[in-house]
Image (cartoon, rainbow, N blue to C red):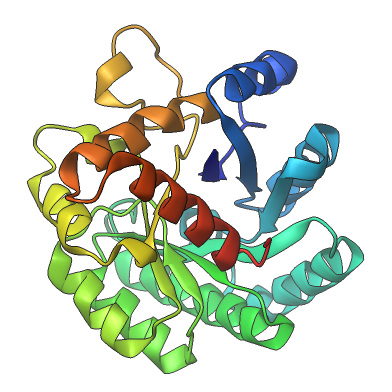
Length: 269
């Protein structure tokens, strides 16, 4: 059994074929998924799809760093309040806060300092909310390694996943030393030939800290690039299979551990 711990199957390219996507997941043994929101509108779409797909689908609600970097920082507390109400109203389906985090790859020239400041402010508010609601935090980190670690520690976050992991083992080691409730989720990036630091992290991390995801519709796994232009939850099977090749444990042990980790992280045992 496989759990796609982070996808956006309600996004363009996927939203019109949700029944087909669900059937493909079932055929590949992808039993569970979490649909992840990135702004107020997408949070609602994620919730609606999670409800449509029934008992084995959930969602997360948050504001992605690129969704908030041009907002007034004065709105951060207000939006966190909106998220609070949304999550409490839909507590049966919302299993995490996020995705939030820091993305310095997409900040704009001439406006970098302000956008980075805004990302941090919104990140802190969502971290505060996760702690308040006793929910895990889904963290996006791109080109922001040191600041991501700093913000997690400053906020006192002990339950989080670094989604779509693209860093080196040292990044993970520092966060594992900080908390035993931080996980690392590998996406299609893991299957890319040049992602050697990610390969090393996947080999060296404790198996109990590892999750897998698609981040669909992005990051089609290498094994099916060229055949598919859009990623979807069923393709998380390819990420898991590549992880099995990297690890020393038997393949069935890896699959069982990742399944257990996923359910433990989201509190779905």
